[in-house]
Length: 382
Image 1 (cartoon, rainbow, N blue to C red):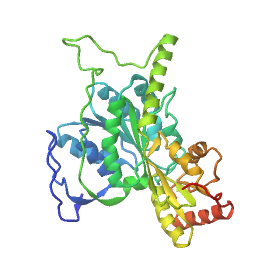
Image 2: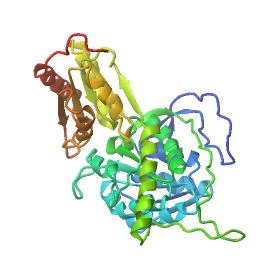
Image 3: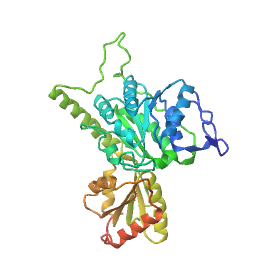
Image 4: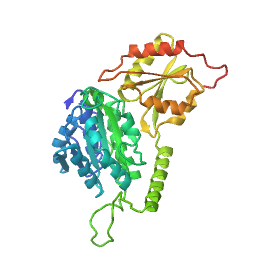
């Protein structure tokens, strides 16, 4: 971590944890390291992981910092071991972080389903790389389906948070722990190789969410009745009742926890929908398009699940068309189509294999969208 600017006013200590020596300062920091430090400052009790590019620096940061804080760090023998160690630790009520990249995340699907079924809170970071298979170590967003459609088996969902900057990734890390414990669910932070590897100036201000009373946690039954944390329900009626309970919880999350950000939508005729690194490219493309006279705006989902469908649907009657930009063959575009329900044209542009589309490519796609769509009807509401 390299200090680049003078320190800001030091933040006061809010917890018993030892303050970071650089707290309150503006520093140049790599995304993986910033997420790791944000997790520590959010009160992470235990980290379990296995090295894989492009998230290895996250594990390396935790290997140094967690012992400094007197907390648990384990480099497991595999991704399977890491996620199951995380499950066991989280079942005791500990605040747990696990991280990996795309192939490793695939190996964790079974345990994620178990945690969803047994309602064990845990934060999982996926710094996506190119695929399928071993693919490459280049940036990708091709794990969108895996993240938002359930990952493992069974009728379950997990909140998925998609940062578009290192500063936002730090803030969302604390939010992820808070959501996990509030709803007793795994939560995924979905980043990509660029966000993990890039360095940006960030101000080291952190938040530690308050602890939620875990009256379900396995802390030893001395002086109280024993507790059971499980996902197994052999009687069909019991399993159906449990699934109905889970679905009600997911409905509550979808009602309360939707997040998105917008830019230049007040007068926009064309809207780019993008998240993460693709949204950063789109932001530059919007600026270039407006300089050419194309009134473009940006809609950026922050929660990929729950997806901000209602906000997109509201836009559908007011704009000429949507352009979805992704570092994939097109996955989020399907959720955009479901939200818009045919009320406006939707096109897609993306690159694969670790290639990032340029702002110029996105502007060219906006020009094609403009040329092939009709103007809004007169009197369409803004």
